[in-house]
Length: 116
Image (cartoon, rainbow, N blue to C red; front, side, top):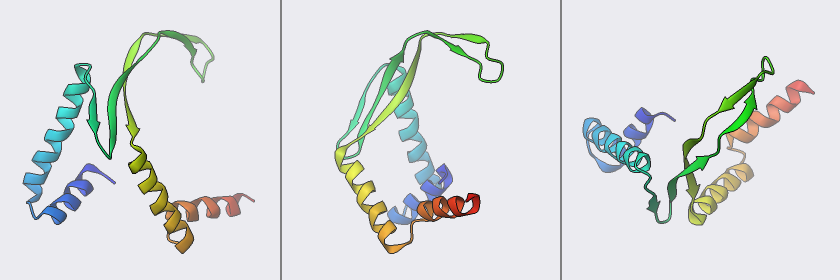
């Protein structure tokens, strides 16, 4: 699903125009990025927590050549889904598995049968 798909879905659900919905959605995303860039934390109850984690500098290797590569200390945004969110996704996907409408499961089984 793309940002345009999300904007269209929200627009259909709320009755707002796509232009209005896109402006609000982009505003939310830019606010999240700005808060995280300033070292903040965002907690959306029932959804999850956005935060920033620090990664230590380390030596890695280029998988193609095998040569060592020095990676500097960096900060990465992370998202931790709430238990309610995790449970909802799990329940919906389990229901789809049982009814046979889960395209992810179909793709996985069709890939296995093609290989074997």
